Amino acid sequence: MAALFKFRKTASSQPVAPAAPAAATVVTPAASVDTTTIRIGMGQLLVEGGEPDRNLARAALMIAEAASRGCNVILLPETLDFAWTHPSALTEAQPIPGLYSNLLCQEAVRHQIYICAGLTEKAADGRVYNAALLINPKGEIISKYHKINLLTVEQPYYAIGQTLNVVDTPLGKIGVNICADNFIDGLSIGHTLARMGAEFILSPSSWTVDYSITEEHDPYREKWVKPYSILARLYNVAVVGTTSVGYIVGGPYEGKKSVGCSLAVDAAGIRAQGKFNEFAGDLVVVDIPKPNRAEKGTQIGEMLLRKGFKFDTLPS
Image 1 (cartoon, helix red, strand yellow):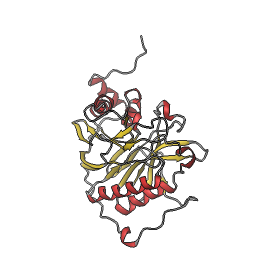
Image 2 (cartoon, rainbow, N blue to C red):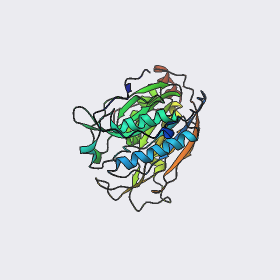
Image 3 (cartoon, helix red, strand yellow):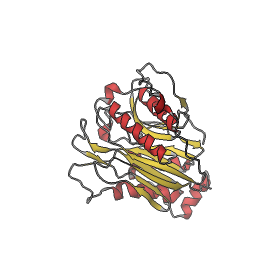
Image 4 (cartoon, one colour):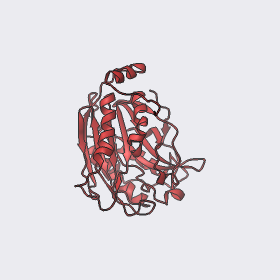
């Protein structure tokens, strides 16, 4: 499906970062585009509440590492600028295009890599959104998405998104959603992206647990592996989510922690999974075969029926 949004990096009235030294601007050779497999870097990034400069600096380092390891795409966490539901986002969020998205666009050009990342957006009408961007190696924002399935606790911070989008790229058809959009009760969002032809669904995330939860408890099998697997197996799509790490400060979840456990699932099962640990800042690299999705339109419904999928019914 043709992109509904396409933005080019533009001059902003916001302050801009100083130019990098000449030695740092050398473009890393792009990994050759394999039409049968894409290499995705799941960037489990330490995201500090209210510290966008430090967070963006860490993101730039992880982008460089992903490029050096031959990744076609790097997927970074949800709201990596201010952190999820940090109060500073209400007053300091930037427009898109703007200061923080421009920095990511510059890194995409510098390293010739696709970047999918979560940022906080201050819209022209004053509303703040939990946004996710897909940026191509030319530094163009080829997709922008606003989170739809907002948790009750985040609704005072972000407005509800109203659009879904799938874009055609040399890597394949890519749809983007965010974190809780993949909850079982919000899985219709993923169903719709699959109906729109997505071969890959990329999901910046910020999975959180109480401070007392450890690796031994791992609550994510039902919460994340199950819904990712439903989409992957029903539609033959690859679903990839990357989450932040670190303790949460400020906002309604203060004292909880983000614990990594980034996840890549396709019809064959779990392709890769990050460590489950609040200190597990890491780049997890996974090679995912491009799914072959022959069905379109009503053919998808017929395929689902053959697989025994039960469509919506009214409660009895």
